Image (cartoon, rainbow, N blue to C red; front, side):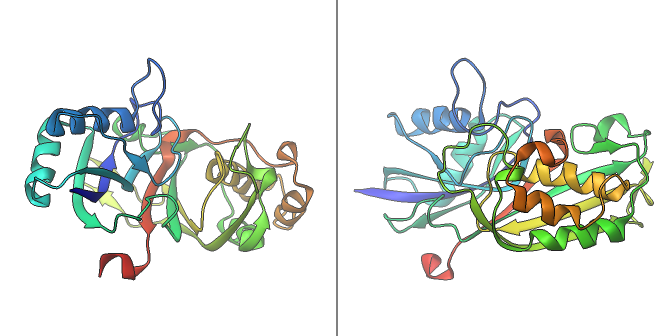
Length: 262
């Protein structure tokens, strides 16, 4: 008898070449699969919620796998974490129906991106924020982001080859928040961090990072807010802004129907 297990994961993506296995490069998927193979003494295939690029982090990555039903979930979580490197941790593990699929059963994904406004980014935050040397007009960025809400063809915000077929995606929500009162004893964040959170049904290759690069162009006054609508309608990647670096991007949450867990 086999169980279908759902993993909830967090990891620091700095030293990984993304989620999906690649030849001769360390990835999160391969690292966890190697651990599962040691525990179950057989090859285990891990199915992730989707693609995550090199250098991107996760607070709520999900993945599922089929394995013999001989280890209680609590014990399995401890066993996996004891063998994983410090940069990856299993937050939770649950048994789910056999037809559950981490990617195809998901109904939304939420990402956020962190910008450090200025050139004085502390060294220990460099793996997690992208420095932005420009003064940004937040209200114009918020105005521009509204043109992306709803269902659209997001080809203009898709980098390179994306083999998922249709480029139509639906953005449910975008929030742009200027963190004015965030501080830790060793650094003052006041007025420095801009957080952009975006939730949608799914995302194309580098879509969030391309949206962010275009929003920065709006914020610095290079594009008017209405330009976002024109770029979207054009379907041409060259009309949008640059692709921002991966280190500021986090997968925050993957949402599934409540019925799966009942």
